[in-house]
Structure formats: C-alpha cells, structure tokens
Image (cartoon, rainbow, N blue to C red):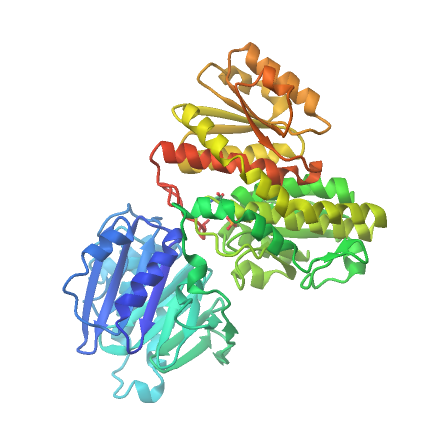
Length: 621
Ligand code: AGP
C-alpha cells in the first residue's frame, strides 16, 4: 500500500513526482503530497486528501525545485485527511519523510519523542520516523563538508533512527540543510531506484520509471541508498557498501496507457486473449507433449519426488489457486491444498519433506503472501512464485517460478492476472502430469486445447453487449448469488468478489449444490443467482439447482455453452460462451462475470479502477 517517489537532478522534480504518483496511484489513493527542496534550502510541502487531481490543483505558485519526494496513501494509521497525508516533517522542519509500511511500535516512540518536546500534528505512524531522524540528526556532530565524506554521517543518522523501529518501511528522507542528497531505505516494502544520466529516481515499483530511464536497481531489505544527482551508493545494514546490480527495465511508458477504453479494467478484460498467449509463448513443448519452463530451478527428478502441493495466495490469486487445485488433481493426480496466505503464515501444518509450495500473486508484493512464503522457506520447503510483476519481492525471494507475462495490471480489480494464473497452472499441471502418469497422447491433446484457448477467449468476449444488457436489468439489486460446481466453483467465488469490489453489492459465491444447505434462504425475487453451467459432468445436477431457485421465485442468469437450449426454459437470462474442456472452463466462464461486474458498476456510477477502501497491492498485514 502507498506509493512513494523521489527525484534528484536537473529537471523540475514536480514533473516526475506527479507522473510517478499517477502511475502508483493504484497502490493507494486516499490522499497524496509532495515535498520540494530548492537549492536555497527551502522546503515546500503540498498535500491533500483525495486523488492526485486535488494535489495538482494546489501546486500553483510552488518554487522551481530539482529535488523532491512524493507519496500517494492508503491509510493505515489515521484517517485520510490533509494532515495525515505524507510527507511528514521532523523536528523544526529539518527533514521530510515519505513512507510505505507500518511502524508497529510507533505509540511508545511517540510518547518518548513527545516527552522530549517533539510536536506531532498527525495521527500517522510515519511522523514518528520524521521526528526520530530529526532527533538523531541533533546528536550528529557538525560536519563541514558532507559531500567529501559521501554523506556517511547522514546515513548513520538515518540508520540510528531506523534501528529503533519495529515494522516495515520503504521510505525516503530529504534534509533541509543538504538539498543535494536523498536517502532511501527498505525493510519489507519495495523500493526501486532509477539510474539516470546526471539524475536519479526513486519509486515503489518500476512503473514510474518507464520513459525516464531503463536502468533500475532493486533495493533489498536492510539496504539504504544515498542519491545525489550524479551518484548512487547502496549500503547494507550489516555488510556495508554493496555494488549496484543494474537491471534493464523492459516496461515502456505506453504500456500503461488506457488507449481508447473508458477504464483500465475494461482494457485489461479485453487484453486477455493476448495475455494468455503471452503466458504460453515458448512454453509448450510439442515434441515431448508437455510444457517447459525456464526458471523452476528444480530438476525434473526433484519435482517428481514432490508428493503434495500447497498453493498460497490472497484474493483473486487465491481463487486462481483453487482452480489450480482442481486442475492439478485432475491432470497431475497430485494432492493439492490451497491456503489463504494470511492463515498459512500463522499455521503450523504438518507438511512432509516432499511438499512443494506455490505462491501465487499478481503484484509479487502482497505482505501476507510474502510472509507465508518466508515461513515455508524457513521450514525448508521449496517455493515456486507464480508472479506477474518482474523483479517483485516474491519473484526475487522464491526459489524458482513462472512469470505470468500479463503486462501491467492497473485496475484494482484483478482480471487478466487471474486468467493468466489459471493458464500457467494448467501448463504446470500438464508438466507435472507428464512427469508422472500422463501419456504422450493425453499430453498432446492438452497442448492442443491450450493452443485454442486465446481464440476461445476472443469468442467469449463477444458476449460483452449481452452482458451489458443483463447488467442494466439487474444493476439495482443489492444481493447476488454466484453458483458453480467443480472447476467452476472457484470462478463463482471470483465473480462474487469482482462484483463486491467494484460495485459495492453484496455477493456470495457458493458451490451450486451447497446452496440448499443455507444460502437458499436468501433467495427472493430481488436476489439474482448467477449460475455457471457450461457442459460438463455436473451439468444436470446444476440444472436441478436452477429448478430449486426458480421454484422459490429467484431470478436466474445462466452462463451456458453456445447453443444450449435446455436452460432457456428456466433461466431469466442466458449468456453464451464457447465450449472448452472442463479444466479450462474457469478461464472462459470468468469473462462474462468480469464484464457483469464491470457494467453493473458503470451503471451504478462507481469508480471502477479505484474502488473505495481498496488498493491494488496490499503490502501491510
Ligand atoms: C482482486 O481483484 C483484488 N484486488 C485482490 O483480491 C488481489 O487479488 C489480492 O490482494 C492479491 O493480490 P496479488 O495477486 O497482487 O498478491
């Protein structure tokens, strides 16, 4: 949560800060702010509750500055307000800080600093960091030429402050009296540095850097960096100075444009044929009738010795993990458990030595998933990360993994990441199956089915106009049920989550047959049930569930295979999708559900890409 940016160099800092904050707005958007430092040692702060537009509106008349920091917030401590927005000043304004993370011991530090005479304006944990740095600065003996000693005394000051914190941070500090330097530090919250020509950049992820530089450095936990316009030095808390590891940024500024779409979410829904194609590119091995992956970092022998898989994730990624459970059990005949990362991290499950962990995540930064990954690694289990964001913390900390290659997903509601995760899991299940019992001909058939998938998704997207009509009819309803069985049960959960997230309508996903054990009590003429019922082994059973809902006066929206005439006699509305093999159905059935949530939210005038109370990546516990 929260996005931070920083700039030092010859350009107007505010231009990069605002561009960067706009690109990071998905991380949090309840307030934002900037601090700018002119060479005359003047610190100007502007901050405002609300979106970045509100911040831009109050930037008039600010002095030209070539050093600055910025922040876009998702509130943890203290309500979203002008006062609680970052940056926060420390001491008498000697330092300004932007911070992403949570300081768990901020109350005790605050009490101590208050008794030392420091005045707090906000309810945030971050203000404690600013005052702590200021208090450590006071203890620092004067240094005549800071540049000559490579700002090491300032590093020591920040380090002294950080050593008192318990919690997580990705933060940047600017100093009123040393306008030629920025200090940045990381523990638990991501920081990416951009290396420019006579200028340097800071961001919470690489997206703000696209178009500014393609040379990037990922800061690791316990590292600090000292940036001037033409130098960048990284220090590790224990190891001292470390060499810069410069990576090339592939992302282009245009990759984040919305194009002709009204919202990122709609664009990302329609990108799915291509994102699925990208997930499969070069990974289907026709000769061996299997899938192949470059970065698993485990030998086929090691993978073959695994007897069990635990998939861990949050939210939509967790739903993809549940799809993975059905797919792995059916294609690879391996036992799979799917655990919420937030539960797994505090659990002590009896896992044997032959247990492989999959950490599924779009952002690669979700705090709970990262904590679960670390806990599983601590216990000695190999972890494969199935991640979208290249270079993200989970991608770096996994023992091996598979990138989704879905491109930037900016809409807070995850769409294309889900279908790419399901695609990657299907390929992995094929690979694991072929290491075990799955025959060559079965493998070849699955490859053929996978190859057809992008076109099937293209066909599924043609239901968009029909879904829009259905959405208009039901947009006033306040409760929805989503029902599906087997492979389509996780999709029902995902459909309900999409609707909740962006249209604020209560929705529940349930296994269709389980509905009669309780949720059926919710059914009335104002509560539509969305049935996922493509052809498959449970089709007739689900049909009986439709009858049960109709008998109780509930409206039914049925997602069916093209040409299905049977459901028509019962359903109030039908949305047709192309037929695919059962293990691939979630990738197709989710399309009308994503569109339904989207069009209902549009009809209700909701903020599609930035729904209330949410943020794209949840980097706090
Ligand atoms: C999905 O629409 C949500 N915004 C959310 O549930 C998300 O999937 C979850 O926070 C996990 O994120 P990750 O995939 O980046 O780890």
